[in-house]
Amino acid sequence: MSPVWSWLQLVSAGVLFCLFSLANVLLSVSNFEIVGGIQAKDENAAMTWTIRFVWLMIIWIGGCCCLMPLAKLSSLFGTCLGELAETAICCITAPVAFFITLTTIAIGWIAYRPMVAYPLLGAAAVFVIVSCTRI
Image (tube, rainbow, N blue to C red; front, side):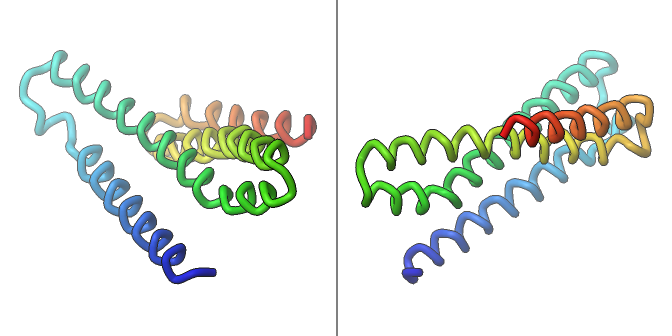
């Protein structure tokens, strides 16, 4: 493993940690601190879902970046094999990122919205079972 690659992994891990910390700070603002009533609540909900979607994309891209050296290694055996490996990596990491995001949201809602959290955890479990049986 080259020093440049390990440096890039360290930097990307630091960036992800900073983004996760920023998301936690933004989501920790309570509704009582927000002035403006229903409109502010709607803006807060929109911001929360935007952050969750961005987090899903970050997890997906991070998974692709971590596994992409395998695709580059397989491209040594042929360009078509390398492109196939890149496509497979994107198709494999997307459900994993979706599962991680869905599980994280559900765990965060267990204390506040148990009627929503437990069905989400069930949906995540069904998603994993269906994904594993199709492989």
